[in-house]
Amino acid sequence: MIDNKTFIIAGLIIAILVGIVAVFMASGDPDGLESTALVVSGQKDLSGPSPEEGDPEAVGTGTFAYESPLPDYSLPDMGTLGGLIAIIVGIIITMIAVLGATYLIVMDKGKSKV
Image (cartoon, rainbow, N blue to C red):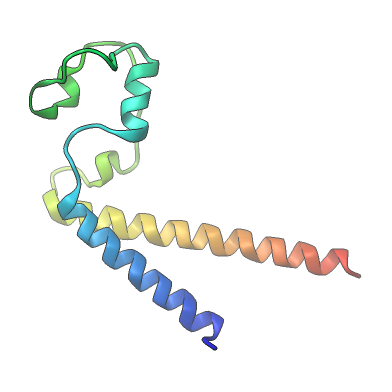
């Protein structure tokens, strides 16, 4: 049986490898959450024509706006390297948040048994 520390390190390495590959395979077209935000804000129709070359700015000129610490999973003016850094930072932050939440749940369960 594999111990917890080895399992977590292996999971982190696999997540980073998948993240690195994803940077090179990602689509430039808005999809998922970004596309849904454009539809909800009325800047995009699901039945309308697609924007030229998948350019999200060509969808419309509405008032919807948001700020992101790592917009489009990248760092400004850094190209692919910025994307790699953003993915790795995001994976590490997510891993810390999950481990922290798990720790708090385990600590809470330990206190409730007493």
